[in-house]
Image (cartoon, rainbow, N blue to C red; front, side):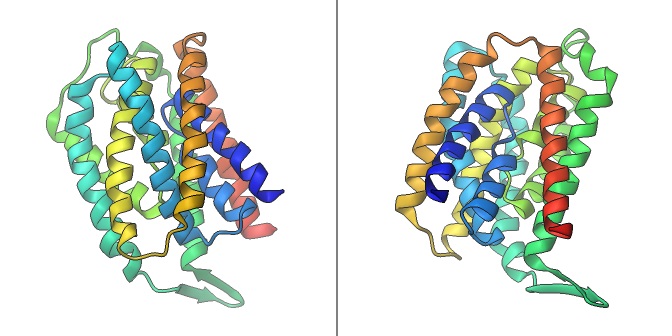
Length: 264
């Protein structure tokens, strides 16, 4: 039963990516950890593959229709995927199983990963829900401040490498708030960045963990169907509503993970 629910979750992961340009890892990591009982380190690796491969399907579709900004995607993605590969290949394996203890409380590596994941989600959600600047995106023209874009790409790469996320839930706010892309173009562009960064990050995991390829490929195939559905649905939702939907979705999932990890 858990496996069936997991595959249903895979479809939802794809739909979310197609609609929002991110959020796939926000769903896939909890599905792997809480529903299917996979340990967080392996779950974050699996998430990189699922989100990366699924986003690639969406990215190719958006490139074909001209919705994505390829120039922004390339500038942002290069430092991002270098950072995520180095993080997954060297930083994550070097982190000790237990980080610290305070009384009876032990901060383990797995708990630390999930809490970091939730904190990053909270920051991203607030930026999309409350920042009014995003509503004027696209009216002043796209901002090509290359040093800033490169730095943002590297930071997002390290953060998403730590939590095994494709990073769309961070990339979309950056593209909207700092590069001034319209929301729907940011969603389409994000899929290109997420695909490249996630799959390259997963290469680091292939060298360090055991992978159940049959399960992972089945999960990914279902997610790919979902992203095509999500891209279709995206056409019927305006930018402002899509931004708010994205922010609230991320906020709810972040609160759930914090409660689950600390209190349940």
